Length: 113
Image (tube, rainbow, N blue to C red; front, side, top):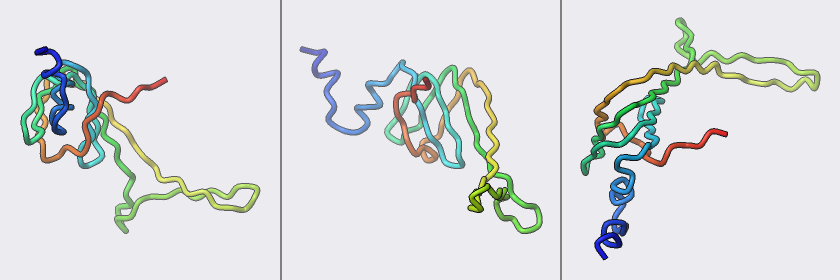
């Protein structure tokens, strides 16, 4: 009976409780993503993660106009294709405290095939 009570989902934070000691995916402000093992959290979504992979995506900005750099290519059909240059940086962090006010989304890790 105690097992049923522990796995019951009555409020949104219960879903995060069920992910304790599991790997999760966290999307943060400023185009940051984290994948790691959830060790602890609180009601503000402050979290302690272990064995974390951080991915930061940045866009190239023109130094003079401060606009995104867009590459335009002409294809045989004469239509234009706009490509925004995205740069990604990855790093591994053994133990990380995440402040909850930057959290946008928490979910099980995305599966890559």
